[in-house]
Image 1 (cartoon, rainbow, N blue to C red):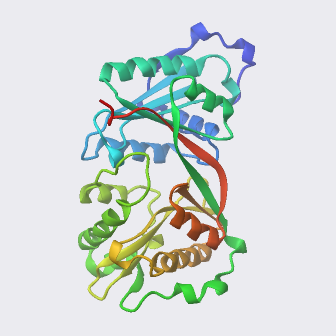
Image 2: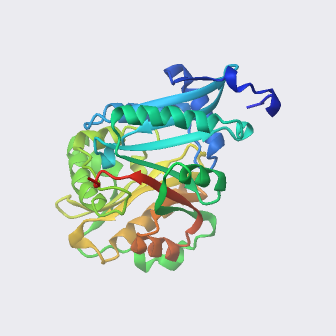
Length: 335
């Protein structure tokens, strides 16, 4: 975005309005400018919104824009995450374009958000900022938010990864074999493969540390998730029994940052198969496949409380970036 000089902005001329489908490209560009480590395209934003609107829990979703002379300068979203749903729990994401900070746009959007949440009777609100964003941290603290959890982006330089040093760890326990989700679909058919995947996904996901209790993602929800443009079934690796029961998984997703990068989604193992090296073996299969595709970076996110996964990623050579600080105000458990 090429902006006018900062002193040309007249706050009275700024329009605050709800987002429409025609705004998706501008909003995606703004979100990318705010957080360039996690870029998003208009297509990805549209699919994300579609997934939210079609979720089985029917979550609330509201986007508000600050616009001046046809430019989207700020955006605030209020939504209920299907994955940790409660009717009185909401999440806030608010960002102002770096070129246009310091003009009260965030304050104005926040005031509109407060009125919206009050009207809905919200009891719990979460938001976040990187630890390296002190202005954003102070903005949240001034509005009654307190730190709740921290998460790291962990990044692996795949070009420097020594696959040969991990040959022994690539072996799965007796009775298991590694297959891609794409291969399992070919063998069982899409519906049956998705059922097997869902059973393992649900059990593994239930024990992942998060800011609120997990809400079940139904088979229908997971099927829609698998249809997202960033989904990569050939990069999802599963440990399966001779009866095609899925006992562990690791997911690789395409990134809007470009073909040089993939994102790890869920890596997890069903409880009866844990502490046998299954997750590590699958991760190594995924890293090998990614390098064959010309990928040079693997990104993943980990809660600081998830010590086993952090230790595993550290062994593999993942290196943490600045922490994302999750803030919370209020609680559905109070009163």
